[in-house]
Every structure is written in C-alpha cells, then in structure tokens.
Length: 176
Length: 182
Image (cartoon, rainbow over all chains, first blue to last red; front, side, top):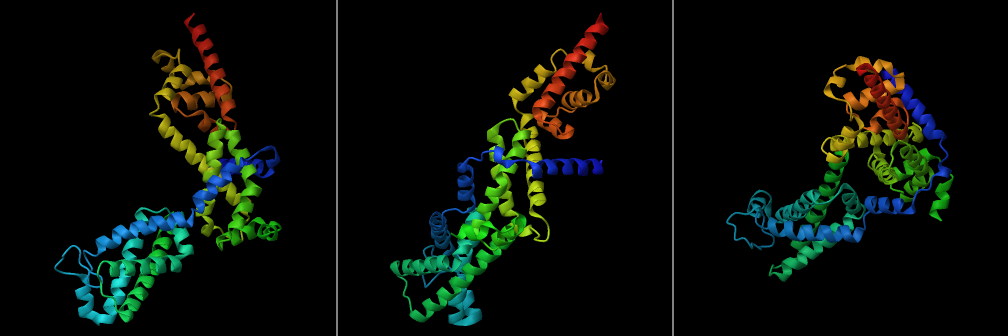
C-alpha cells in the first residue's frame, strides 16, 4: 500500500515537474491578493495595534497604576508591589514593561501571524511611537512626569514590547 | 532592479533569500512555479475558481512553512508536497461539507436512482460484472460515498473521467439487474 502511495506520488510529481506552465495563465490578481494577505499594509496594522493598545493599556491601569493615574480607583496596584521589592527606579521600568507587554500579548487574539510579522519588521519604531504617545496621554490626563522616571518607563516599555513581540511571534510560528 | 539581481538565482537560493526576508524572492518563486501548481490543480478540480483559490493557499502555506525548508533539499518536490497535501485536505474538507449539503445528497440519489434496497442487497459481488476500473469507481461512489474528486485521486485520473466511469458502471449494472428480473 505504502509502495503504491509512493508510486502515485512519483507519477504525479513527474507530471507536475514536466507540465508546461506556458499553457496556463495565472491571473495577476491572484498574486496581488496573496501579497496583500502575506504583507499587510504596515500603516493599517499599526492603526489596529494602536487601537488595541488604547483599550488594553487603559484597562491595565486597573491592575497597575501608571504615574499615579488610577481611573478605576483600585485599592491595590502592582506598582506598589514593584516599588516595595525593587525601589522607585525599577518600579518605573517594570511598569513600562507591563504596560506595553500586556498590549502586545493580548494583540495576538486580534492579529494574524502576518500582521504580527509586519509589526516585528518595525518593532522598535512601533513600540517607541506607542510608548511616547502613551506618555503624552498620561501627561494629558494629569500625570506628573519627571524626565528620569519617564526615561526609565520608556526603557521598560521598549523592552516589554520587544520581548512580547518576539515571544508571541516565535510561539505562533511554531504552531502555524 | 532588485528583481534582476535575483533572476539568475536557483529556486533553493531564492527560498533561502526569502527566509531572510527578501520579498522579491517570493515574487520570483511565484512567477516560476504558479503555472505548474495551477495546471496540476486545474486537472483535478472542475471549477477554475477552486483551483485558483487553492493556488493562493499553496503559496500562503509555502510562506508560513518557509522556516521549515531545508536548503539542502530541492525546492520543486517540496512545493509539490505542499500542493498535493493542500489538494487532499481540500477534498477531505469538501467531503465533510458534502455530507451536509442537500444539493449533493440529491445528486447522489440521482446517480444511484434505480438502485433499490433489494438491488444493493445483491452485495458487492454484482460489481464483479464490471471492468476493474468501473468496479472500483462504482464501489467507491455507492458504498463509500466518495466524491468524484476522491475517486479520481484514488484511480489517478481526472474527476470528469471518474464521473464517466461511475455513470457507465451504473448503466451497465442496471442492464444486468433488468436482465436478471426478466
């Protein structure tokens, strides 16, 4: 049976290899559709990611306040714990990591592998823009930003974004 | 311009470049092989639209599997394996859909019309009256409820030919039953 399968495979492969593709016209729209699917528009992907981060980032304030912003008026925040175990500077880094990583990890539920790949191609640029915009939003909503702490927070955000994107991508690729 | 520099590269080199992120390498691989893939699929699927959709799926699969490609192995058999497995998966999926599609069930009834339970109860030995390829085709269609594409795959022929084999086989069986009744 197995040898029959092999024979069939070989027979069909020979037919495939020797077929004259000149007789077949492949409509150009097929490649165009495929290209759009494999290489999605980076601006559209960024807009999608930005929207996801807007929602997830806001919700994450419920578990970890950022720069004293506590819209959900929660009694306990991970920020307090970070502060207790590592001090103020590391707390800022950890908060940045958590704020950015949560968004990129949850984005996996809404983005295709190809969209994730698109983000990965410009990951430093995307995390920087999203991080800086987030800082601007914090400032807009009344947070008091100090340059040193904001710098540490951005560092954490970049690291969190980088590891979340890399980890998600590798994991999803291995299952695809 | 960039495309020109890649044009002389072998398929294996292009695959390697694509793994490194060169989009133009993928474009060239599509240009070189999409005709063969489409030709292979068109012979096995009746609707051109289905073959074209599957062609896209084959190259999408190639994209997703690019990191599994081993450069030391030739590209063409690898692509063929993807094409063939995608086609077989497509048939399996369609068969599952067929089972719940009333239109297909109706067609099956039409094909086997005239075969009462008493006739089917003759058992598979009645098929021995048919030439071997018709016997196999009718057996697969009536007893295993296989689609014409599946029969074609099994008999290494086209779906159209599989349809003809089943049709001729059933015609012949009806004649035999008629003769037996008389």
